Picture 1: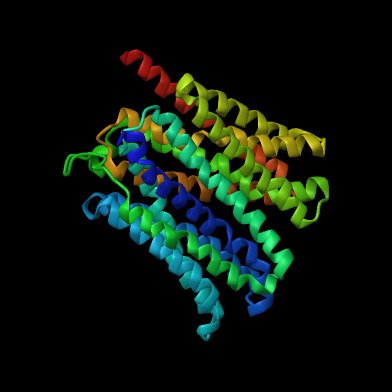
Picture 2 (picture 1 turned 135 degrees about the vertical axis):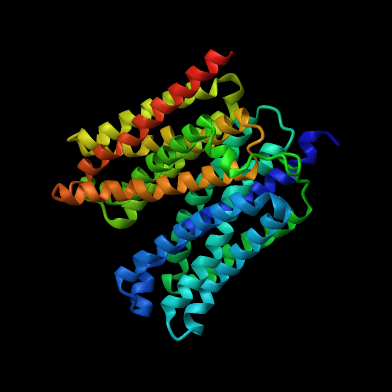
Length: 396
């Protein structure tokens, strides 16, 4: 059996893993208003659901950096899918079973966030360890499945609610839980290779002492911030700029953002072997900066919408591209490197939207001013990639 066919099941498992992560990240936010109406949970508490989800992921990133190699990829991957399935199913049952529904929701979120955090760290090194040609393209295509998963969750959930009613959301939670449950089989039986020989991966201390890795951390923070600053504010921005209702705003903003981001990753996955990665990332960074400026400075609502949508295309390569740039240069980085890079991306994803919101609030609720401040992230990313490219050219 040739290498491509042998590791096809491995790729399928990682694809489903990223789809599972997109379900975990996007399903509960669709129910925030339902939680408020059904259980009487105040919006202040509901806002904590996303916070708990991302904080849990960050903690898992740290744990993986320390213990991931010792526990092994297969065990951690299987645990990730079981946790995701239990958490999503728990969302349907625990709020009714416990005296405090909010506690049931939070327990479920923590459980599936553990699974989401594990697969976020593990999928990339599992694929990196497979003997594929054109790793840049394979990695980009892998990460596109998070985008398609996000689009699928939003669209299919919207259709389900329209056909069966929002009050049937618990059944849908159980349906989504089947995806990671099925993927337990794939991770349990697919071939998984070690990324580095046992005991030969770089330690956290070694990584922190490596200038290239520090640049990679900066890149990942900026990649996460560039993506999430626009993605999380796109709905509110489109609603306010175009005076659209929320459903239309979600479809025109976050959904189209995810579509263009997925298209970007598929294009690079198809033609990446013909392109130089760092140059492509620099071009994407420049496009991202232009999109931020268009969204932040244009007085025409249609141009603002175009800036939001094409920003998704520009950020598509940033996260998988950064992972590939580092993994190809620090071949002994091991799981610790992938875990710390994921943590940096999550930190950027948490900090970026907060900065946009803070600046918007301080400027008479102008989201455009907030996005203008957010343009610092693609700007720093461009500079960081230029430094890495210059160092690489100098060494050669």
